Length: 212
Image 1: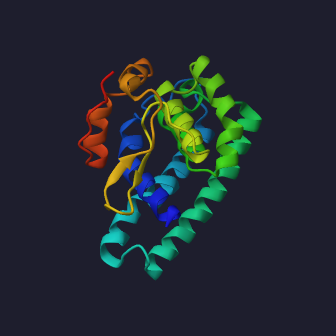
Image 2: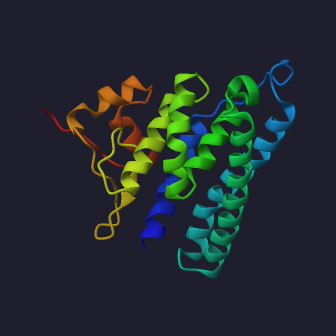
Image 3: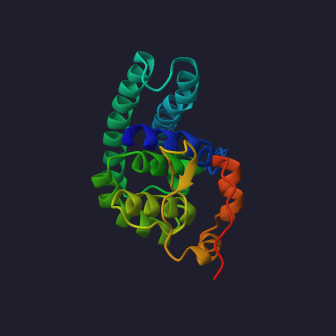
């Protein structure tokens, strides 16, 4: 059941992650790596293509169907292969920024790490933190990864990006948020929209930030 809840969260987050990605239109620039851009474009299509199919399969066949099991197996295979590719890219080139792989390619690096196992997320979190300082990754994407790591460890999240499905009510709800009355200040500091807007737009949650 926990796996299903996490999958549901990833499905809902897909729209948000895609919304953060700008299509790169400067492939002719001399400092961009066309081979890496092409590889990351393939990885992006596999990563998001599988996840965009989840809701269709869920509505037509249900979570517990053979069709869903098949899709999960395909997604697991693609995630594993894509993680190997991204690890190799980072090991060979460091964390590639938009100046090397374009905006879409840089966001793809984040997506693959965000969808990886918890050990990989913890391992690459410091690398992404350094990449943000160097302008190679976006602070709002780092915020999502930091929240994902914390919630996986059973700790309160910082920015309120992570959502779970309440098994009793069947409704979406946020994982616990540290110092919740000030969450929007933290979100604004990394370029994230107010939590009320994020909650309604992507998860259908009518949320009111707690007051001090």
